[in-house]
Image 1 (cartoon, rainbow, N blue to C red):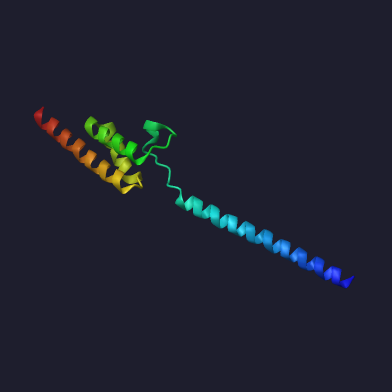
Image 2 (image 1 turned 180 degrees about the vertical axis):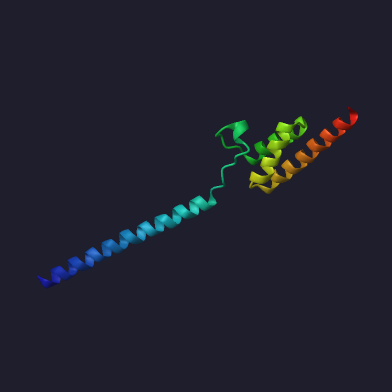
Length: 111
């Protein structure tokens, strides 16, 4: 009987250890998944709502915002510069903002 009690204690300890180890590994995997998930972009919400946009779609949007060259588009481009995690999209937003500001300056000089 004492051997069965020892075996039972060992099995119980092993099952507790395995459950704890599995929980720890699952937490670590979830942390990695969260770290690899790109942050939500605020600047696209006004245009696309909750839809996720690809980098190419975001570049196309910032290029068009640069062509608008108004206060609303410039504010959205500035938000994209602050918010965007993709360096290529940030570069496109920077060029578009410069273009929009240049158009504003040119139009204000002509009036």
